[in-house]
Amino acid sequence: MGRPRKVDIIGNVYGYLTVIDRAKSYSKDKKWDCICICGKTHGVTRQRLENGTTKSCGCMKKALAREKSVKHGGYRDGKNTPEYQSYIAMMHRCYDDKRLGWDRYGGRGITVCDRWTLPSPNGFLNFLEDMGERPIKFSLDRIDPDGNYEPSNCRWASRSTQGHNKNLVKNNRNTSIYRGVSYNKTAKRKNPWCARIGNGRDGYTWLGGFDTELEAAEAYNKAALELFGEDAKLNIFD
Image (cartoon, rainbow, N blue to C red; front, side):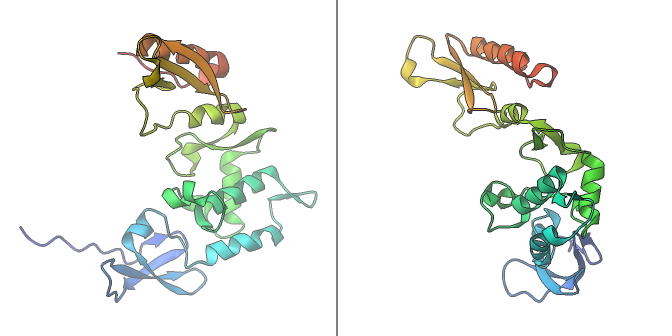
């Protein structure tokens, strides 16, 4: 078996960074020298470049802190617009590791698409063009909770819809193949299969205990249709 072919990413652009050469690295993690749009050079591993974890030399985080003093399309009557507030919150979640909740976003590899991370004001203006105005009582939501922030995976959603969406994330401790269904070991023989659904207000609505897993899944589907209509994410039966 021959040696694996070396990958050359010189010239590739990742966010604010352009790869210019292989870095002299004495660690196991091979790095690439990159030049940032601010003019600084920065050594980054190929993995962090390609998965979007690193998009600048660090100046992006500093730019976020300065954004509030920059007047552009994110202002209306001298105040930040709802769309701009959502944009800044999104950027902090993914790139400010000092921010509360970062571990649930940037910390687990969630990133923002290149189109929305262009230098100010272009990144925000692209975001506004793609998303449109934020409806009252709506907020930014990722359709796939494990996906990145990008036009195809983002929408303005109500709190109840987001609560329902979060309920679709599979838990490692889940005991059922169906959404909203779990097995209650303490119930023993009577109605051991439990059904519940996220309602976006106070967490979950209890739907009851059932003799079979299928009955519990059907109860979940019925509640989802009543709560969310055509937006309901339903269990599919073979």
